[in-house]
Length: 533
Image (tube, rainbow, N blue to C red):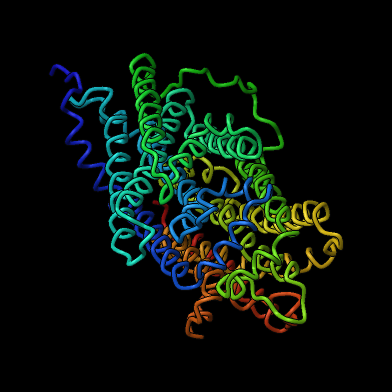
């Protein structure tokens, strides 16, 4: 049978790809949409004209500009302008990450596990897989942008008109497409999905840094970053459309370049040849623990640097946080301001809670990777050797537990070093370390839940990410919403004391640690007994 040229044969594959993505992308979109709409409603109810004007002056400092971007419309700081300053960049980062994972998952990852070999045997054309993935990203980004524009426009907020909402939604969509193009190019350059994803995330990090440096300077460097260019649309202030056209052109160029690379490379190979390895494996890799460490060392090192950078970024605004918190009762409730403690101390405590939640994500990813390896059939070759299932899983657990400690220490050091520069009375390093390490039992319980699901019901393992998202919402946003008490019981992070205002209960922390140990034990035993996928 003659193979199709791929001009129209990608549509059946597109339908199949959309079916495979019917849960993940809608979950990303609806979660971000819910958070975005709720934040707009809160801002409209919590700030009056005077507090918004004072907040605009507070936001106009180097630390906050580096984190969130320039403050537009400060001379008449409306709810819309304040919302764009606060939310636009963070939402764009979330959309970018969604696109990076989506493209890698349906291109390079499919090639690695052999799905593309079966597709190549059909009259689909060699471009069908890439086109289906790109069109899936276009549909997901388009739906995300339209839903954001529609729901924000329906809110009874005068400064958030339809034009501004459309610019906001289009900015998110086109920014996502640009990073979909970045991921598509990386998937053609590198033969490994892990390398392609790591480089794509690295490009996202460089874009963020370029924007931060550019916003602190003349602004020229910001125009080289899709994130900085997106912010130049100034939604709800000037509503510029020219940056959107540039973003569209960048996305088209990147995706076209990816298609060109796909035409010239062989399936299963990358344009850039992989680095030649040793002819014989190192003795270091004979242990399941060291093998897991070899597989996880690069992402964990990136996470360590990221946590340090996040801590340093938040520490850079400690000097202005008291003025910032004074503008709104919402921020005071979010920070947990108390009369008998400095605002900077309570803000640092809140930041540690956020970073502890973020630091849980790579721990869960370490366990999820084992399930992904199992689905691809790679563990059969490992388990036929002396290393057993228990030792392989135990090695990952040990590495995750050690990484949890290191991640907490890295964020505390970043917060301390950066805060020492901007505060006349720097925060105590022992206090920051104690406030960070006290969250370890909560992280271990969440990690233990993922281990338990891996052993008992691995197909439900992705559900731990939903639980992780709910924990983030309840532990962070919930403190300002007066949520019912029973919701706080559902997440271990709400049971951790917020130092220094709350006292440490050794009994509670011990009980949480024992619960985590029980989950680890039960999950390991179930993993040993169940059949491989």
